[in-house]
Length: 119
Image 1: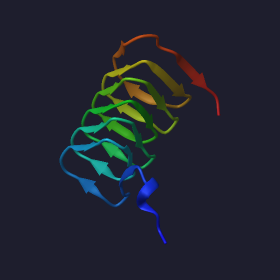
Image 2: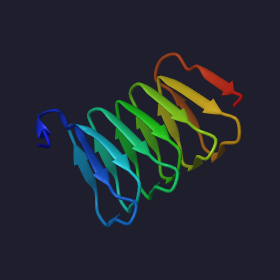
Image 3: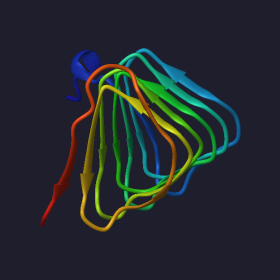
């Protein structure tokens, strides 16, 4: 039997396009496409083939796919090598892996740690 008691993720599947904003108090995982803002009180993950055409507001964020919009993150942003970012990044911690493509303005909330991580 499937236990929904511990499920905390909101998932946009890889063949799904959501035209409109998405808000959740839980983690959000995007494997498909969202064409507006994404807001979470926890973590937003944009997977390798996922995309967001809007602002991401969250506590933490892991970006493996594409984002065309600003990231307003109160904690940590991690950009993996497959990430493509077109927008401003505001975060407490920024971790950038080798190979990331981005065009952005970085705004400092507190202390910023930028790490170039080799695979």
